[in-house]
Length: 284
Image 1 (spheres, rainbow, N blue to C red):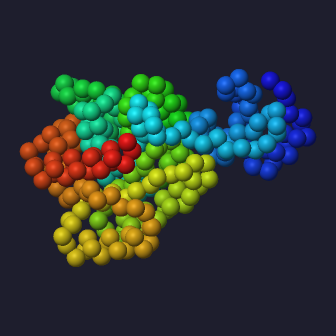
Image 2 (image 1 turned 135 degrees about the vertical axis):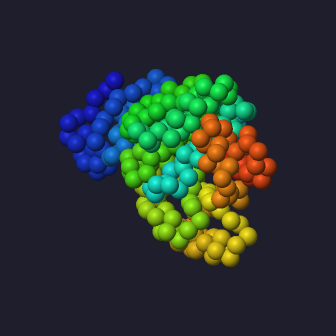
Image 3 (image 1 turned 120 degrees about the horizontal axis):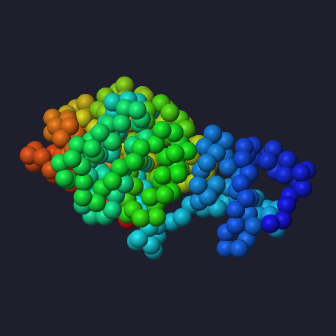
């Protein structure tokens, strides 16, 4: 592969503030991939590329799922606030998606590991089916495992941790759809505003489809209507029609290694099926 002069390389790296330069070859053409700050191990599909032979800075777009029904769909669950329902959403979504395709649930909230614990209970009861799980302790491991499972999975669900910016950024860049669970309270709307900065940073790398999901939701109350108006004004994120209500069934299902679609609460069952159907429609 041809080499850049030290002078040219230092000038180019100085302009884009790259931290790591990794040589790769795509379709027989020599390229240098310049990784962005913080998430220095982002996959090739999400990085800036410098063509060695022409010395021109180009953007290598993320792969599209359009026209390729077999491509793995990646769904990220992110929220900087704890207790918003990330793992509840992740486990229910992964469990239901595994009924229609090979699904991997990657728990990035270690050592708490709520999603991993849920899977252990599910597996012990013989209900794992086409679902497997993995864990990631940092953003590098998360990226490596996502890239690995993309070779065989139909769906990958990434359950992110609270308050770890590097993991959240990585999920935002990796995912085809990012879901942000928000509890039905003003305080949770305020806390969710912190995610917006991370979304904008991730959009410097690739387009990010981020949408809100209400949790502990009571749709027919005046508070719910007021919160919806406030969320639209302060956050500006699309809000899914499907919600997760304030129901004991979610807690019971989580502790039993089940989804709410597998327990006796018919309202919760229908609620989850509608939410999953909406998500599948978005990413298909």
